[in-house]
Image 1 (spheres, rainbow, N blue to C red):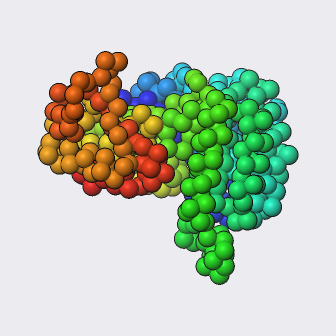
Image 2: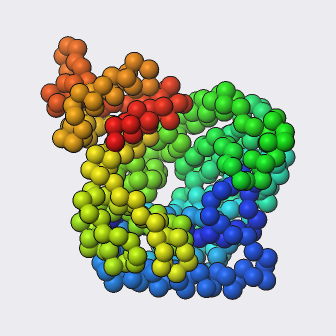
Length: 410
């Protein structure tokens, strides 16, 4: 599991959204520049330590998230330049909010090696934007999409369904407006109320603000149909792309690739070999013992405190199976055969059978000629039949149940 992906976290926002429980800080304008300068100097130093240790040599995708990375301006450009000194990513994504993305910044990022901007559009209804605490309006969001495209970058739009006051008509209007702007990629997320957020507290006082799961499912269905008609194919549980514009960074997560996290709250995942090789970069973290994989989260700005989770081989394999279920193509037969070397064949086949019984998944032959005659989950797990276990429409809508079936094998 080579380290092929790098995630960078920029935990600053002009104003925190009412639904957000991510690690981010909002600052008055007079404080922001000093805070960003200090934070990015620490990012640069940490990046160099990764590079000096040879940790970045095989990185092929970079994703800078937040927070609102576009608030950092020229610092974000300098970060991209410095990353390109250590690796040559084929995909480099920066998250941005419409209100802080300028044409000058988009052009500079493109020149520094960024290939893709992920825009937090959320909705094109101004009343809904205000309800969730966003500080841009619909016109600014559409202008930002055009700005990114004019800079020669791919653009992805994040949308949310189940927002306070959202209707089927307003959702259709948002979909139509975004598609008219022709982004390369669209991600759709149902709103969830996270404890401790302003919107959660508001919903505790007013139940009408709670997301309706049936309405969210209908929104997801409408989006799938509308996006599919427009030429966007669903390749993972939340995302649609024009051909050739899938997010390679997210695919790296779902296919069990190793990745590093840079910045406070950034997570990384290393196999045993890479952890042993890079352990000195994570002061205070215990040796892995017989752990097969280690998940690491940076807990401070200056990379002196980390949280580590140690996964056994069985836990790692169960996680790989679960994450593969996020992909439209599902769990490949090769992964199932490898999993059977760690998880008892009967248990693994039973989990596959249960997903079929619940209507969450189906077998899809992996060869053009398929398999003549009936076969069982045990046949696939044993390697006698090549078929992938792909999520059905129900498995896509009710993914958490499908994910749990395989994580329970850990």
